[in-house]
Length: 460
Image (spheres, rainbow, N blue to C red):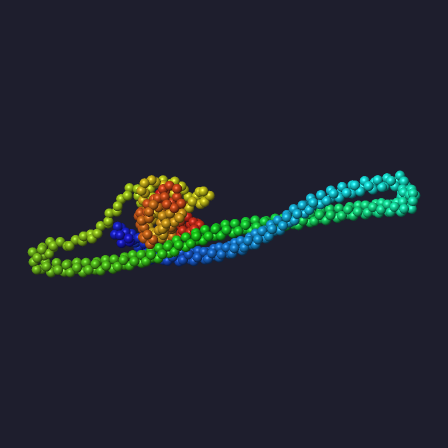
């Protein structure tokens, strides 16, 4: 490639960027390239360190996520256990309520029995009031007609008195039993309700803890995803820096080669000039000697024409493509035909780090300046993309040509300003055929902090 470019224009040797023909200036440009290479190496080392730090952050987040998920499993086990206990309490409460319903039936019977006893006792009390207490029993005894009748009446009075005492005793026992049963069941039910409320509160806290852990896991996953995306961007930046370093090394090698060729050409030209001078001196001496010999011989020697040099080669014609924009005289030329469909700036809540040039049909895309292809590959976002590294006046530049239909240069290739590098397309994260063109004052990085507005540097 380099030899073809030299053949097309002998005054410009393409290395990396615009390299002048004065040897001292080229030596200076090699020094600049070496400095740029060292700068890229330092940046790559820094990016590798950032990748290592990001990997540690990801590992730490994943450990926290694993711990949180284990805690969630433990909490879920506790929730399941508390649910079992609540179900058991609900069953006890149901059973107790059934006991209460059965007791209500017993209470109903007891109340009926007590009511009947109350009627009997009321009758007894009324009789006591009417007869003055135990007088009725005496009347019964004094009204006997015989001793046998007296005995029978005494037994009957004793039986009636004992029955009254039994009724009163049973009445008290039934009332006490009723009160105890009511108190026992109500106490048990209240205790069960308290236990259930406590279990529900515990379960509520457990569910709250699970919600907090779920939120923590979600947050950790989001942070992990963010760092993984950052790591991918850093790895992309590392790959680009490695490619740029490779391109710089290639440019330095090419520049050394070019200088060697210039030195060889200079020595060859000096040798040829010396040889011509010696030949001219010999010819002058021969002419002086010939004059003394004869006029005819001198005339013959003077009439002999000197051999003429013929051009050994001519610039190879380049194929013409009507869509290729004319190469401008500025530092950067327009990379393709078409209109600017989107400028640099905020777009879709993101920074659009370049410009979009749109056109229909088959549209060639050319290098904006002399340089070396640092990357040529397919990206999920850029699609088919070409990165070109330039060195202009000691300053490193990087141009990016994205969404290409096809790429026509490979990594390490030396390209001239206006040389075709691909065809405009619609690959990667793209909507419609266009060229996404970026210009970076320095190396390309993931944050695109070196990006400048191309419209300030290329013809509109």
